[in-house]
Image (cartoon, rainbow, N blue to C red):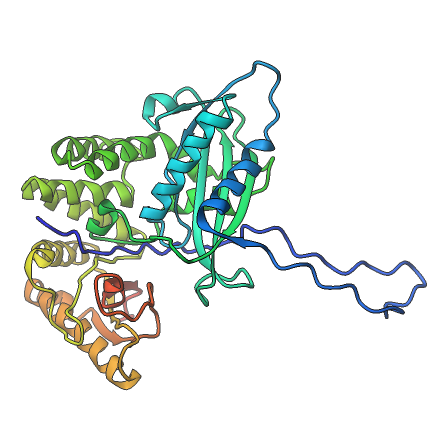
Length: 411
């Protein structure tokens, strides 16, 4: 099934600045006036924002130059694919960053032996490079104005469980392709994925010497299998990819969002609706347990109608399994509709409510008892994910319906 235009945005719940703390005014000595007798010092210079490739090189050079090895000592290194720091997705830009850094390791830092990210490589307790790429404004704030990209890199030593080094830089917006890769465009569901959150925290919420995030450290072996499966998917080897996603899903730590998304998407690619349905069941149950149930139902711009064609082909499976899982869990749902920011806000609120009602009606057809536990809400354009206001494939996630699992009213 061709779903190449689908945009998935996975929102992480915690976004931590990767920049160094701002300088603070000195504390006056005892008996000294806190009021300066001279002109205040000049503000620190603005953080340098450079072209994309220059920023990647600068961050990587800082990262590797901080690691001091004995003469002749070598460390095994794997690169866990870099991600968008907010959505958790891989994009054309993060793939290019990973390739650029790998080239630098081979040519400039021979003390590191670069290995592919595989389960067998992780068993050798290598150093793992993680990195995020996040849109910020000049104040280093996320989800505000789009003024620069913040690059954050970290080396995590799996033998010691500690962060070896960090590298940070800021890149200009111009010439950066942030289009999600095919796997993430084809993924059906999003939620706060603990594995992705652990990855982001390992990069953004640490300094050298700090421990690796516990969740990330515990689950990296399963994540390595998923990474291999994603690579197969990106190279159109869908049958092998589906088998590897299925294998990972059978492990104790393989029941995570990215892997289940991949199992669904690869199964649909090879026409295996049985496995796609099982993967959807697992996705629904996983997200209900997390109280964060979201499938990317997309709507035609300006309407409360689902998009047509192949993109909507799996929607009946999703509706059926959401109804099944919600029935079994006796869950109460708020179905929340969203729009892009084009158009007036009163019109957007009406449209977003109509979109929520479209999904609610379909669920009610599957389960009449569930209909009594659903409330529909229209948020208009107040909670965008992409916020490009282009009304095309780029901001499809802003024309979405999401589900909030809430406490049921007491009888």
